[in-house]
Structure formats: structure tokens, C-alpha cells
Image (tube, rainbow, N blue to C red):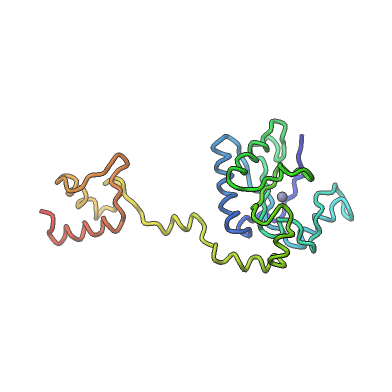
Length: 222
Ligand SMILES: [Zn+2]
């Protein structure tokens, strides 16, 4: 069973809501962990892109693929709150003959995403969205008016997990991981029994290592 046509527009997840970006990344990696190789397909759609999609099967060739007109802002894709996944294991982007998309849907649900496969009509198995504003976009429209207004509320959520990790201090767990100029001091403190790690290693922050090294230079450890 083929779920949908392959339509390539708006594939930039960076244009989506910050939380959705993180969840999309988590979904792809969690799926990979279970042998389900996926890619992120459609993400954010402009009014023009949504209109082009709406025209399909109506005023343009092809089958009908959406019920949402661009100007109506009634697709979550226009609000940056939805993305679609595709199958990326070479067996066909939307091939669901082995229940691939239901397994991905299950993982997405666990990550707190609303899954289009749970909808009655239209069932949209490749589709995931943030659940906070309801299945339709009425809640978003009522609260924020337009996607532009909604996006203005994203600024305070811009820090992604990667950035949080980058802000965290580096931790060294073995002498080998240390910069050359700090290895001597830490090895010395280990040899002297002043320092010892646990089963996970030394657990020394960058700051701690610097302080030990400076103290050593000042002659504190003899
Ligand atoms: Zn979708």
C-alpha cells in the first residue's frame, strides 16, 4: 500500500517551531534505533506552497492531496507545527506494506507528538504535529491570528538541545582526553592518591582541571 505521492516542497525543519525541530530529530534517531530508517519530508509551507498543493487535483493535474487552502491557514504545516516523515531505507518513500509507518507512529506518540495515523479522516500516517493547540488549526488561529503572529512567540524557546549541550562544560573522564599541558598535573594527582575517579571515569570539569594545573604550577602539590 502506497500512502501518498512524493511531493518535495518546504523541507526545511529549521523553519518549524523549536520544539518540533527537537522532536523531529528525536523521532528520526529513535526510529533508527529500532531499525526504521526515516527522513524528514515536508515541514513548513508558505501560503503559495499550500495553494500550489491545494490546486493539485482541482485546477492542476494530479490527485487531491490536501483539503487546506493557503489563505485559510488550516494546515499545521503552515504554522510550523507539523512535519511529515518518509521511509528512507530504499523500499519506497511511502511503502507501508509491512506496517512501517505504524511503528514510526507509535514511537512518535511516545515522544508526545500527535500522529496523523490516529486520525479518522483523513488518515495521514506520515504526518506528525505538536499536540498543544488541537488537531485542527482553529486554536492557533484564534490565539495568534496568523503564522507570523505565532512565530513571534517562538523567540524565548530558540535554544535547541544541541545549543544546551554546547553550553555545558566539557567533562574529562581520563587522562588521555585531557589537553597535553594538563595531563602531567592530573596524572600526578592520581599517582599521589589525591584524585580518583569512579566507574565512569574522572568526571573532571574543564574548570577543575585548569585550577589543579595552576595550583600545581604554584607548587601546591609536592
Ligand atoms: Zn503533514
